[in-house]
View 1 (cartoon, rainbow, N blue to C red):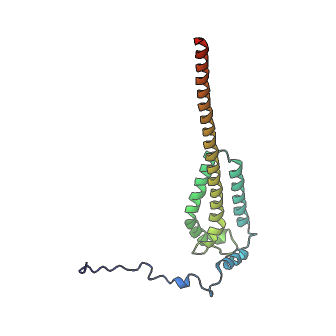
View 2 (view 1 turned 180 degrees about the vertical axis):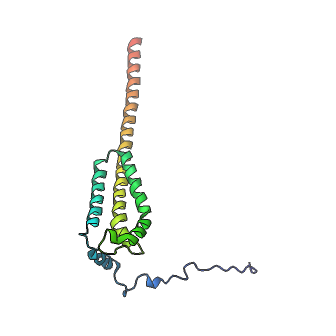
View 3 (view 1 turned 90 degrees about the vertical axis):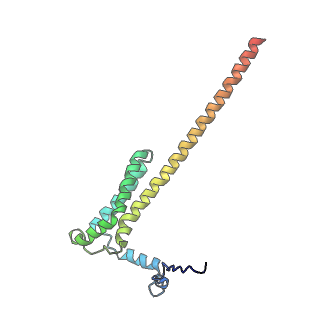
Length: 168
C-alpha cells in the first residue's frame, strides 16, 4: 500500500500527563483531607444538608422492603446528582444568602463532596438492597419450583400405588 498517505493525529498530544500528578502539587489524599478540614461544618445550612443525608439513609433502611419507594428515592437522588453542576452554579452566584463563606468552586469539588457523594452512597445502598431482594426472590421461586416438582412426583407415585392395589 505504497500510495496511501494516512495522517492520524494523536488525540492525547495536548495533554501533559506529567502535570496530572507531581510532587509540587502535593498528595491528592492529603490535599483533600486538608480541604475537608477547612470547611466550617457548623454552618446551619451544611448541618441541615448532612442531616438530610442522614434522614434519607434512615428512610432507605426503613423502606428496605418497599422496592417501589426505594426506586423513586433512588431516581430522585440520581436526578439531583445529575443537576448538581447547575446547583453549584446557582449556589456560587447566591452564596451570600445562605453561607458565610464562598465554598462553591468552578470544578465542583465542594458540591461533589457535600451533595453528590452522600447521595451516591445512598443510591449504592439501594442497589445493594435491590440485589439482595432479587436474590431472596429468586431463592423463593426455586424453593416453590422444587416443592411443586416433588408434589407432582409424589402424586404420580401415589396414583401408581393405588392402581397397583386395584389391579391385585
